[in-house]
Length: 75
Image (tube, rainbow, N blue to C red):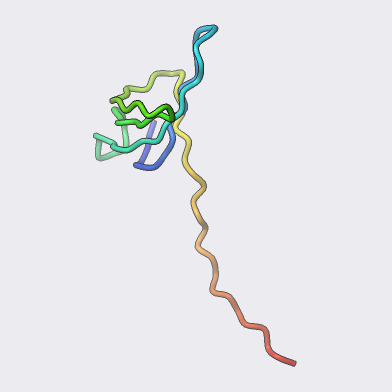
């Protein structure tokens, strides 16, 4: 599991009745992007997380480098 600051952590509920939790990774303690992560969950709670097999790191869509715009020639 690899992450960078700004990725989202999605922890699936693994017991009936336990809700899923999502939050933003605000700190990665390992230089290579491995856990643990400091996560600010959507409910405002912040904690250090060692994600288990029920967790997924969601990478936000990265903007592709757009080619420079070409101007249309005036007719």
